[in-house]
Amino acid sequence: MSSPVKILNLSDPAIRTLHLAWFAFFLTFVVWFSHAPLMAHIREAFSLSDQQVKALLILNVALTIPARIIIGMLVDRFGPRVVFSALLMISAFFCWGFAFATSYEMLALFRFLGGFVGAGFVIGIRLVGEWFPARQVGMAQGIYGGWGNFGSAAAAMTLPTLALAYGGDDGWRYAIASAGLIAFFYGMFFYLRARNTPRGSTYFKPKRNGGLEVSSWRDLYFYIAMTLPLYIALAVLAWKLSPSNLGLLSATATYSLYALFSVLFLFQTSQIWRVNKEHLREGVPEYERYKFRQVAALDWAYFVTFGSELAVVSMLPLFFMDTFNLGAVEAGFLASGFAFMNLVARPGGGYLSDTFGRKRSLSILIAGLTVGYLVMSQVNSGWWIPAAVIATMACSFFVQAGEGAVFAMVPLIKRRMTGQIAGMAGAYGNVGGVTYLTVLSFVDNSTFFLVIAGSAAVCLVIVQFLLEEPSGQMREVLPDGTVQLIDVA
Image (cartoon, rainbow, N blue to C red):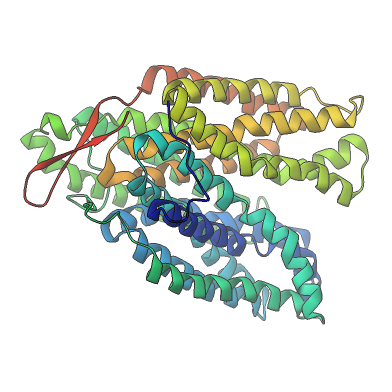
């Protein structure tokens, strides 16, 4: 039986670190989504077309996919304290650039660069994993993810009021800039207060930089194959901006991006090969081995859970408006229940994982969200509105609890590469969002929910065959060559 995380025990350094971490993540989401609730003001200030608004929304998530991979490598190499502080402070400048842009081109550039802050989530996964034992790490990660993820909802609730308080035509600019200002100073505070590990603990770093170290040649080829969907998602985003869609990019620019993504894929493949070729030829000692299929299973689980959340949150207000003929304010209020569930569902998923087992909990939660989306596919104008809201929130619980269960397991695979593993899983969540939103552009709402349910059912099968319950201890090598055992059960 797990020991619940006592979040009010501020005398415990681990609890203080957890609060430092979730609030840092919370601020990254406030900054990342600071534009969304003020988009009406931005559209009016720059006389934006619908296509230009849609392009900004796409640009906001484009950089996050590669950024989560890069940040994962950096956090494993330099530690969460430095990387989180730097990310918060640098992202403030992107936020300010967007707030005081004088042209659409500047808006687009800084919205694109601002997507890098969306990688902040990865950093805290490694930090929280260092501070909490296996019996508590799921709930701790759930609190970190759930409370931090609420930053997008907090931005939606506070920034319009702040813009009104500033007043004038530029009130929206000062509201967005204020978010960047808070992030900048909290980055400094985080650097002063946070520590990578508890006193006396070792912060294990990868032996090589540039990619995950794997344990077999088969895992190497599997790993390379698993990187391909990341670049396909980027190509899809470029296609959405191409002349055949939103028309923000020229045909030449679109094809240039396709070529760039191909080159980047080949470059990453070469880096993965460089990192792994020598130790695979020499043979990986038994105590250093782990199964990459564990990483792959968690990637696809996050694709389904967080990916579907990103897509559904984007379309749900309009879904309620069109289905029940509601006004924008009422529909937005009803749809907000999906995001609000993060506050309890992610910690709940982590707690279930700590208590009843990692694989069993994740399997039940994915099965639950499969049924949840099947039910949502049946919602129509004949439904009683409270019943539709209850169905939505029940589905949301399984989705976000599933996210908590995924990251309850991420720190238990290979400690020194937790950042990279978290980065890859996080990137797959964004790939899922891109995939499902692309599907939505071709089908009706009912079919959209059915597609998510079908992909979740496939993911459930993947989890059964690829995922294994962590047991015993993982092994990491100290700088002096001795082996340290870390409990994972």
